[in-house]
Amino acid sequence: MLFSLIIPVYNRPDEINELLESLTAQDFGQPFEVVVVEDGSTISCEHLVETFKDKLTIAYFFKTNSGPGDSRNFGMKQANGDYFLIFDSDCIIPKNYLTAVSKALEKEFVDCFGGPDQALDSFSDIQKAINFAMTSFLTTGGIRGGSEKLNRFQPRSFNMGISKKAFKASNGFGTIHPGEDPDLSIRLWNLGFQTKLIPEAYVYHKRRIDWTKFYTQVNKFGKARPILNSWYPEHAKLTFFLPTLFILGVDVAIIALLFGVYFPIVFYLDYFIVLFFTSLFSNKSLKIASLTIVAVCIQFYGYGIGFLKSFVLIQLLKKDPTVVFPELFFKK
Image (cartoon, rainbow, N blue to C red; front, top):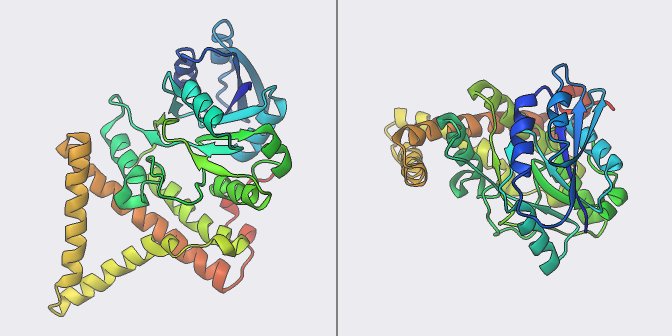
């Protein structure tokens, strides 16, 4: 089985350099190829890719900007492998990644898998706090951090594998972004393909974003989910409402406090105390634990507000998603 590694990149040559460097250190004993797709960047990484041609079997392609999903599809069409591994450009790949994936697929083959993400010691404190917020069981149920307590895992496209057969049958990613990865997972299920989590296939996801960019990202995640629920109502879950209920509950708790009712606000205080000490235990840093509280507040508020707005417009008022949220859709 030949692995083709698909990496879309947009104006991030430094990131692609770190990622490719990590691929040169793989302990995998079989050949693999790397396909870099420049998605209409104004800051090219072609010169960096050239420096790796004596270390990796690597190809570089430039295309007009049409979003990460379409760029991944483009890369898979150019690739020679029969199994595609997809990474975001801000990932660093552990040296045993390909070996772990190969062993897992040999033991139990599946046409699509996803892996978790972790943080390196070299990451900034904000990056570590955001990583904890995005991977902790206390915030997301651990679905990005390696939880296997899911009947059907929806791989995330920063760390995903898909067979050539499944790609051809599904036509790959759609035009929605974010949300293109759960959309693909559900379409694969409907075609009879299986997905799973491979906990050993983790990557270090650097997430080079500040607080403002983090808010924008999670807000878009929130907006995308009701759109997916309207497309695939059979896969909608009550848990998708939790961030919105959380932020609405804060308002209720504050109002209750004004009337001398303390229980709701105590509940929230207890939650953040548990969150703080869990992060402190995990990261061994008071600063990161404190930043975790900031990250989770931004995460819940951004996602919750985005979800609520989208739920009203898309699922209650039946508006066209491409009209009310054009920022979520790329044109090919």
